[in-house]
Image 1: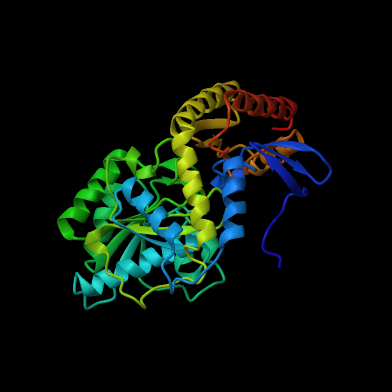
Image 2: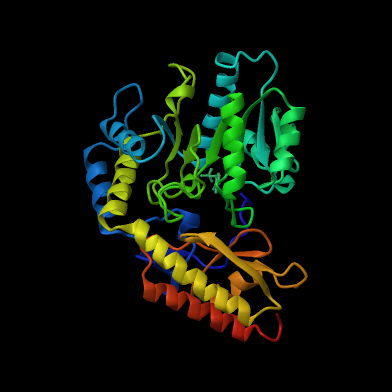
Amino acid sequence: MNTYGRFPIALERGEGCRVWDTDGREYLDFVAGIATCTLGHAHPALVETVTKQIQKLHHVSNLYHIPEQEKLADWIVANSVADKAFFCNSGAEANEAAIKLARKYAYKVLHMTQDPVIITAKASFHGRTLATITATGQPKYQKDFSPLVSGFEYVPYNDIQAIEETLSKNPQTVAIMLEPLQGEGGVVPGEREYFLHIRKICDQTGILLILDEVQTGMGRTGKLWGYEHLGIEPDIFTSAKGLAGGIPIGAMMCKKSCDVFEPGNHASTFGGNPLACAAALTVAQTLEKENLLQNVQERGEQLRGKLQAIALKYPHLFTQVRGWGLINGMELKEDSSTTSLDIVKAAMEEGLLLVPAGPKVLRFLPPLIVSAPEVEAAVQILEKVLEKGRKSW
Ligand SMILES: *Cc1c(COP(=O)(O)O)cnc(C)c1O
């Protein structure tokens, strides 16, 4: 169906941070399936695990215990603030599970008699199902799909006063759902003071803090989870994209205090199958074995430093470079006629894959295994592209 505005290339092979198209052209991949290919392409550990697991057992129903799923849940619980995990297949589905859990919590624990409200942020992104486009505070994703799901209110991100006002107008609020750093909305990091304030409100009122870590989780930001940058703990958080390095998976985690689902409340046929969970476990083990969090921090600093130098060289084009670890954005001037898509297309022609985060932000999401020379090579391609475009941009 006509759902994607696709670029005119087809990718057929990858290795590490490089991919090749069907004409044999090579690209440096700073998209990584949109923050998904954590270990890059064809990582030997992931290849081995997936091959062995599919030869052994790839799928069984959640009617039975699944050892790989239990091991993955144990790893997440040992390496996050969560006590419990539910597995599904995508970010939207993980967020749907979080929304359902919060609603059940409203009735069961808070004994609400009115319909509960979940507050989300403007410019957020939470997925493409009906509930998650409703949670997504961007009208462009909601247009033509009404009626939307009821029970959502929106606030500007990083604005303490706005959340206070919205809370006082909505006493039936059960949860505040936010990204630790807004990804699709333009690579906007959450502010520590804002999140500390929200945590305090939640502690005082019993409202749940849900963090959507679908893009920020699994090491992308240089810490395992984005919330570690903010000095707070969520009650519920979700993961998907990078969790199994490109094998489809989603997960919704919560603390014991809001673990209110009972058998029959929620389910997913594919969710948590042996193949996806074995892949995620291998991603987890490889993060540890290859010390990738440190690589993400170092390569992130290297990349931001270089991008900042480029931004200074083209002050009529760029305003700001921002991000955490290996999720970084370069913002274009609002009044420039150049869009992020213009630069993405030109970079692709020169062998560098990038992705926009909205019309005015260029996004850099290399695999977490990216090396210093590869960061250098990507930056050189970008410089070449900007030099070539100097006259028209
Ligand atoms: C990509 C994304 C989603 C949606 O994930 P899907 O797997 O495409 O459903 C949700 N939230 C955030 C923050 C995302 O970046």
